[in-house]
Image (cartoon, rainbow, N blue to C red; front, side, top):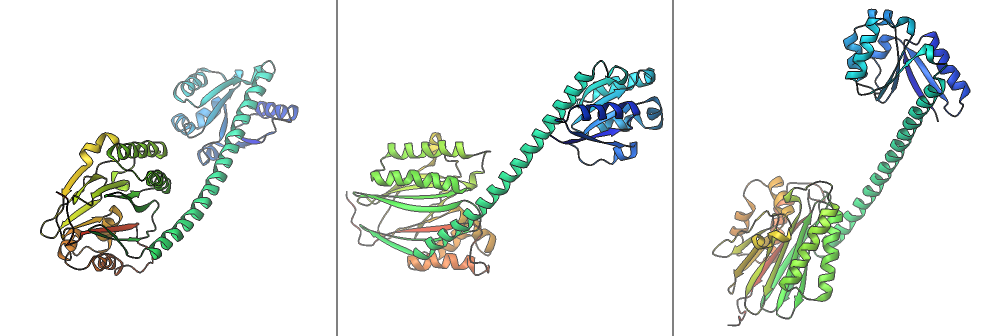
Length: 395
């Protein structure tokens, strides 16, 4: 072990004591620096251990209040004094330092150092041992932090590649179901976290799941749970309730602090292809626009919680020719950041008469025309559900 003790105005007796302890106990291996009062006031490293040799002359020459306040800057202070110097002024000052400074952890009389030698030696040994353990732990944490930073940087680069591949594979995807057409588009962003969407088809029903998270771990958690749901090919109300409950539980375990509502969102929408009905749950800042003719906006901003499913629930009856546009929190955020000319819901309403793929591509063009980077600030996704004009609804 090796550490440095700062000794303020060291006397001959104190220097002799420290040298004897150092020579007698190689394992301790301490070194020390004898500092003047001005040096003491200029010490910058606040984890330093201070040994303060108090004498009447020293107290007379220096401001006691300044000394008392300066000691609070250090992690630990040990007081030494000589019996021949112990007058009322010295005694009172020692009592004040011990009473008002929690970091004053020891006080020794130099004349009794022979009698208390082993006690002083053991005390310094424990201090040095603790400081070295703390320094080793700090070094380990720093190395771990650097390693985590390197891994995070690598993962971010790889995930951006995956996002870009996803974007190229599905630049503007068109999917058809009985009486419905669904057009979707995704573009990658540079911020951490991500947005994803997927569908499950079961008999005459279709489930659309969209998610937006503030960390890759949370995105992965949702996707893993959705894969399980997709493998079952079932999504009745009970299964969806359990799905939301499990997401809430995993998010709680992954969160170090309460995340902003706008950074985590989940949109679940079930389409009854036979009855032309839509129902679902909207947690966070997903927005659903309905047209033509009227606009149905659902931006509930609720945190993802099983207990809030009743409040997050929505239900819509559709007719032939209806369109439902779902825009993600990331798309809205990018729109507000890079295109302030017109609100996004008004822009969509004004363009709901153009073909689905053109409408979605125009949305992203309006954002990207004002930036030169390949990636947006945040992941963005949009999905347009169109009821065909010849769709047949069951009575």
